[in-house]
Length: 85
Image (cartoon, rainbow, N blue to C red):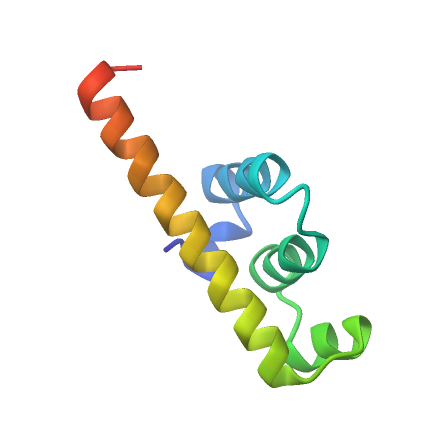
């Protein structure tokens, strides 16, 4: 996974922003957690307060979102390897 520092700059930021916009448009809490944590550098406490949930719940949402992004990247990498697109 892209580090938080790398995600806030250059290609890492653009890639994460595009992935969040495309894949997570329907899951606003998941997209918000990933965007705020990885792109804005918000703390778990800040995110929990904004969403009105516990830090443990923010961790669950973040974990599920990161897993989904990793799976999407794996599928995309296999697609590029086989179809060259």
